[in-house]
Image (cartoon, rainbow, N blue to C red; front, side, top):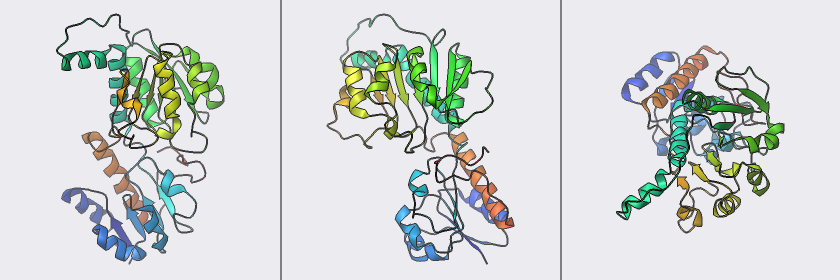
Amino acid sequence: MEQIFVIAPFSEEEKQKLCAAAPLCRVSFPSPEELENRIGEADMIVGNPPPALLRRAGRLRLLQLESSGANQYAAPGVLPAGAQLACATGSYGPGIAEYLIAYTMSLFLRLPAYHDNQKQRLWRDEGPVRSVAGSVALSVGMGDIGGEYARRFYALGGTVIGVCRTARRKPEFVKELYRFEQLDELLPLADVVALSLPETPQTAGLMDARRLSLMKPGSILLNAGRGSAVVTDDLLDALRSGHLGGAGLDVTAPEPLPPDHPLWKEPNCIITPHISGGRHFAITRQRIFSICLENVRIFALGGTPTNLVDRSTGYLRSRP
């Protein structure tokens, strides 16, 4: 009998649904200690186990992550030969997009400055602000997250230009859609550059000093993908010089950002501890479970799972 180990934090009701979806398999919910001792028995794992532990998972045929990011599991030698890797891309877009909109509005309206004034009990006008209406956002990465941010920015009256890795149909809420090769010529056009990229060799260090200098003076940079896409010290220089008007970061490099790093004290930089893609939103939790449940059902029936990751690129093989 095939064994499915579920280590993702699902409710009792959800666990019952997982068992019902694979009646001919043995579905179990091991503790971390049990997983370490029994991982060699698993044919499928649902959740994010320690990558180093997977070297002993000789029977593993499918690893279904509860995260959208899969880079540490896609690295050569992590999974046994022949094992497939699936992620939870498609779960996090609405939640992360709302964080990105919050960063955008906060920086446009100078809310960090007013919050600092509040702590000092200082009643002071901080001057002109900007509106999303009439502004241009460059959404770099047009997957689930980038698409949901673009949809919301457009709904608030803004114009969206999308940048994606591969050719695809242009959504109605996006004015123009371009390939990554054209990023340099697009950066000067945007009031907001929003990154929602996975970590790959092609995205590491994408926003370095040169590309930051290409951004429109006074524009803001947002990053809710992976911290490695932005060279942190180059961003710090761009903020300090006044070239950039602000930054909203849910991810950093390194991560966590060291307590003594000067970026913490930048007045126009909002930093959150990689929480926009967590399970804080009910819709996110529901979508994660739906993807995992579907792939448990498919695995039990011997079918081809959805949300499979191409380990050579870090992206989905096909869209869900």
